[in-house]
Image 1 (cartoon, chains in turn green, yellow):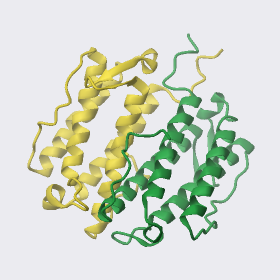
Image 2: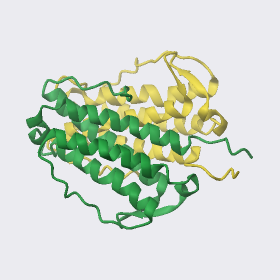
Image 3: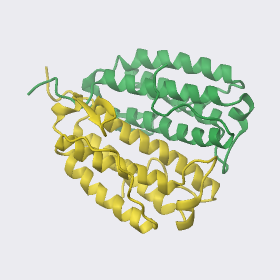
Image 4: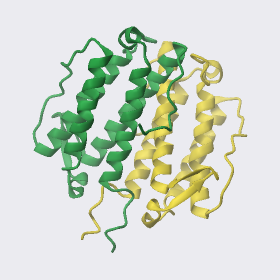
Length: 159
Length: 159
């Protein structure tokens, strides 16, 4: 038995997620202001709405996991400019770093009833946050291409 | 020190990936035959081409990691029907199960030069396969919506 044997540790998962969040931030930036809030294909939400969903998940979910509280999913934050979204994005980057580091590795296999609705092991909840972000950002790439804008490279995750 | 402390184990990562692959398979199925090969937005590849990229990565990459060989990235498989893609998809499901289970957990932190081009720790390479699949499938969701077709639920991963 060797405690060093692991697929990845929690710090590596945090870095992985923040790399994705950095890319998503650059996708938000790439949208013209008006299109960020209005452009849509096939009746889907504009990219601002998708970004707000992501903001309503990451930080609040981690805070809830660390504090052991059941908070309802809250999408009431309703900014009207790209700058407000980006400022909130950066604020949540710090929130995520702060709370993620407080989840001990022992807890990742524990069940947690996120937002009082999604009862899964914590590692599955966190993978879901990352997957959901990649999924919505993939939609954002199509919106950008449809607008004639080159999106950032998918594999570039660092600032 | 406790060897049971882990974010997730390799079997959980395999199940996670195969859950995503199951969803991607249903997205392929949801496309009308002609649109699978031809429909595109903003000059992006049709969904068949994206699915073929995924098929060229998963199984061949794992085989290469297990056998320690450097194979070039090979996208020469060129099917013309949805049925051929789905048959190959199912074949690769088995290939992935077979080879993934042969990567011992000790190896996930080792570096591997995938396709002679992408030198990263094995856990990062494998997360990239999953992320890349979610990313392209997110594009597929927009294509389906633009075609007036309801995609499968993102959170449903089982058969």
